Length: 416
Ligand SMILES: [Zn+2]
Image (cartoon, rainbow, N blue to C red; front, side, top):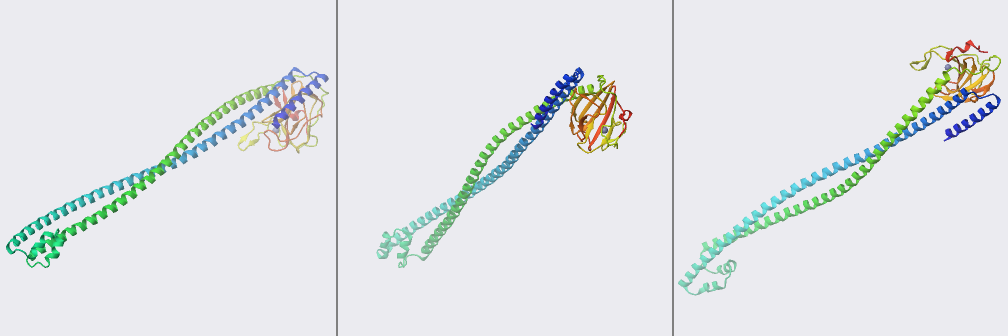
């Protein structure tokens, strides 16, 4: 925002300067063209920077959305493995329930068997009892009377046996057999009762397993609900990711378009800057050193220099004069300012046309104090020393071009 404001102010002051210059001495067509190109270049550079920022933001946003999506997918995977674990527990429990069911069935068949045996035993006892009664009846017929008459009131073996204690007539053998049979039946009933207890225990265990299974199934259905919600969230997030990626692609296309426009503007500008301006001669031919008092050169014309570790310049295009930031820079010879702009390599740069194909260039300045089209006299301040563009410290890059070719500035002026 600040940058845009500054640009507008610069354009305005440029227009005013050009109007003033036009009143004093005519703004040449060439200067107007240079001014237009400089404006175009500045605008293109600004657009390019903005597109670059938007691209970076779109890229960051896409990465952020993708990270959220990945996190949700991790959660979903964790949930899926939890559900799988519960499903396998349920199936194990179902197996246990089936085992218990089999044990219960086996126990029931044992009980049924015991009931059958009890019934058989009862039948044997009944048969034996009937035979015994028959024999006693026969005995009654033989002896008539006595305790045998009581037999008609005895309804079962135990009540009869009570009586039978006093019955001398009853055979000890029969009594013993009946006693044994009663004991065997009682034992069978005891075994059956034990089996019933075991069956009840098995049924209790089975019921516990069934309730455990129900509990796990309810847990699983809760997890299923959570997973369904998460899947929906993932779908929504994936749509967001797609949108963010599409935005990024659009921002990239915009950046590429802005870059192409900027590159073309830069090329056009460079072409103009390197052409022979051929403006009219101004001044009397007097020259002066652009930084009075700063006579040490850190780099001479034509020198190969290591611009960046491993990257060497193919012959230095001018001379480098170190000086503190803000030191005023004087135009070395009278002429007309034909360009004033910011470039990635030169930083703030001003080019002055001295006529007869000679141009002087002042680069890496902190500030430009020259308006395109304005006439400058030798010694006029056109900017201040800085370190803008491709520069590693405060210095003035002073360059001269003759008919578009870089020439040694020391051919025209010596340090003083
Ligand atoms: Zn230089």
